[in-house]
Length: 402
Image (cartoon, rainbow, N blue to C red):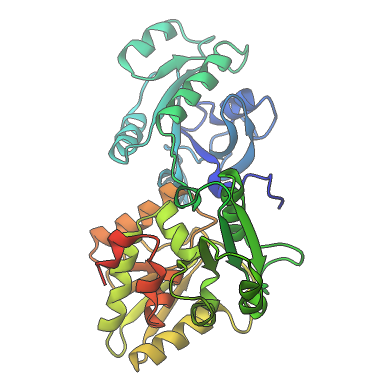
């Protein structure tokens, strides 16, 4: 992936919902101008959510998610409908496709209520207007709605513009690090070569942080932890900030003078996508763990685990060293995240670079609603190494929590 590529996690996620044969796949093909989705008269053609990463004007880079029908039938219908509902957790804009010849159904009304309860901007596309006698009257009773025809292309461009207007209302101006910098500032990024990353690539949080630094007109000096101390000594003036990979926290903290702000990629991403304060509060629960407590370690991506993997090896070792106790661990990755979190005493999540902001906040809300503390890798590691207060120096309002 190049610095100019837009990661999936930074793309608008557009979820397409509706009953079987309402024309969801036809709508996807119509708004993209491509045959991306299989169109069939047989019910249940889409059996699992299908993700398509693409450019969609006038929106730009998006992920379009085709979902199973809300009235799916058969042995696996319940699971398929549940998967469609789960897509809402990562949907930035929902598009409900309704067969204009049939009008709104109980399933359509139910999904709209779910969408509203999650505060997701939405559009209703009354499809097949070429077959409906009174299609024009359908939009009067529905907000943000439009009658369209995928067969003859009527109002497809208007639908795209209506979707884009919902995106504009939800614009997120959060930055990773740029709001902490001034033009011409120098930031040292300590980036050990991650054995889990493909050869020749930096991991995604490092790429995105570099881009954010450049966009504000600042400069980034990138070094490995083994060369950091030497390079720091060669600088004519002190850097504005040092950002390190969490796994090198202890060494980098020891090599960084106390008057230079120090933080980590993971901490920056906790602020960027989730709730840094909640992560700090969650990290404090590490001191309260008891022998045999169950801890969930969750990662947003799937990758081949190395012999010294951070999630399954390093974190459990650090927790045992910090607490002097042995815990019970459960691990999840990718889209897996338990519905029932009550068995866990603590959740430790990765930096979530592969998840979009809405899904990260959904997971944190699930934990909060079920009374389970949640933190992330970088915050937890800094706390266990006794340097969390130091690494929150760029965020003085949060240091008081410690």
